[in-house]
Image (cartoon, rainbow, N blue to C red; front, top):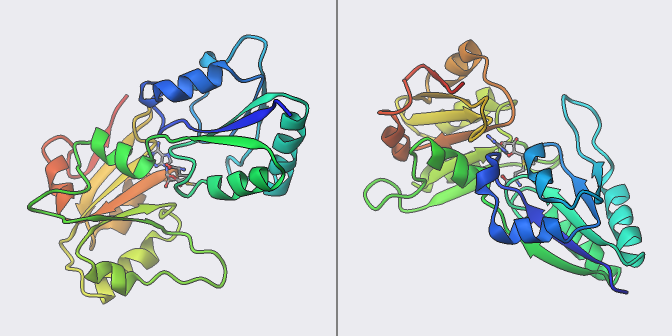
Length: 249
Ligand SMILES: C[S@@+](CC[C@H](N)C(=O)[O-])C[C@H]1O[C@@H](n2cnc3c(N)ncnc32)[C@H](O)[C@@H]1O
């Protein structure tokens, strides 16, 4: 079987944040299976004769079932095709890339992971926020704001960690997250940045504090996809991002 699959991270949005390795993998693909959050501009690196299959969800629609995506990749690879599975950010950070790699390997399909810049690092960085800093944060925790049914997120332990908290998929649960962190002892004036569509032309962001984050985000009309960054490092963005709303045209 000559076919293979590249699990490619396309980065947070800005096409220039694509890695050289991702560009090379895209150029070698016969077919690309592309997630919603991927900037379609990256598809310009495919060969003109490559086909594109859009998968994933947008605007609350049902996503293509995971099992279907995995079956498609196995089927195409068994036909000898080179498949580019293109995901936003990094495929192994909240991207179900690990599940896909496992399924492919179990089916005997060669798979190569091409890491990308994850939104939780690249999006704050574009705003001037380093997630770690020698004086301000000795570490960073990447966490989902959207636990699966039956799972709980220990916000108390996260608050006690003293690390910068970088929350993916946190917008829908922002009131609960803010309340839990306050109850866990984080001060009302703990700095928070919420950045929607980071690194893209429609980027919007709010720099605020834990006490005001819910009302400020609602007032600014910020929605998904957004990264929430909580901690002292957010102060380093204050010079660039207005405390209310910063909108990049
Ligand atoms: C299913 S996760 C995928 C994460 C992706 N694998 C990564 O490494 O960035 C989707 C979440 O990533 C975040 N996200 C992805 N792209 C973003 C962007 N350009 N701006 C802000 N948040 C983004 C949002 O929290 C969104 O809900």
